[in-house]
Image (cartoon, rainbow, N blue to C red; front, side):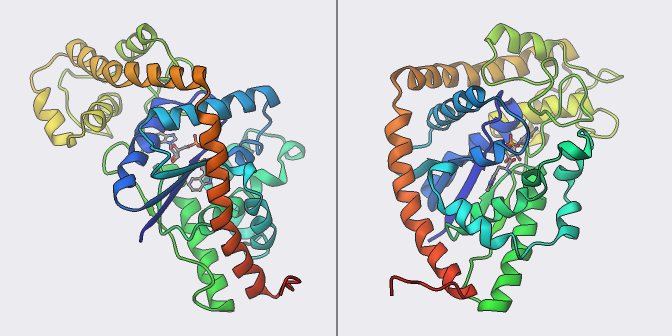
Length: 330
Ligand code: AMP
Ligand code: TRP
């Protein structure tokens, strides 16, 4: 049976990029295999974050997961730090990824470039080790992520191959990443040359934005010269990004979206994109709010941690045994 695993960091302000690139698709896997979706709170500590903010973001993300259609009967939903096996396996795996390869990770280079050397935590550097632990603990073969995380799944594959060669082919399961055909990389609305991340209040649509703000952001999105609604990432990055948003929410191809908007003016085009985003986010936000208010995410997370830990424990034991740690219970 296919095992699917993914996670999102609770660093706050989830964006439409997270929704289209990751969150929206998680529920689709529920029919095809056994799904594990978690909140990567240990990863959220890799850059400075206020403790109360982190805790609130964790509740938020749990509610977002449930609001997106994840069914706790089918999907194990849990918080990373509530399953201690993640940190335990991390302590073993850190010996099998090397300084050179970790320093070549794009995410590390980008995030550390903004910091003084004296403020770059070891956790930011070792980020892919913990992520590898997350993945292999559940024998996951499929990891749905946005484009920016592909490199981290690839380094996990290197690690798995390295360990299996040394300790036997059955030590760890080799994972594959899965990115969506449309929407794996949503760009900022104010600068379509950078990805929509959690940091630009003008160019990013946040999942908690009021609907009038969502509309305003889309209507003032940067467009391009000319007046044709055409997908051309090089010369029309702004229009291409809006087309991508539209196509992925409507679940159609870029070509179908282009055909639909043939002859449209930019203003009317943006208005229709805004309508589609609002139609998706408004009910989603209502469900999210309800779940936060009634705190129904709490029993889900407790049950999820229990189920996750049972499975993770088996893998941890297998690895401990393979590398030569003594099992005093036998
Ligand atoms: P993060 O917010 O970095 O924890 O990312 C959570 C998930 O959202 C990962 O699978 C990312 O690849 C995905 N993601 C983040 N930003 C974007 C974006 N702008 N477009 C598409 N996917 C994204
Ligand atoms: N690193 C991912 C991100 O920033 C979050 C994450 C942590 C993850 N562990 C994972 C995603 C394991 C998939 C699988 O988006």
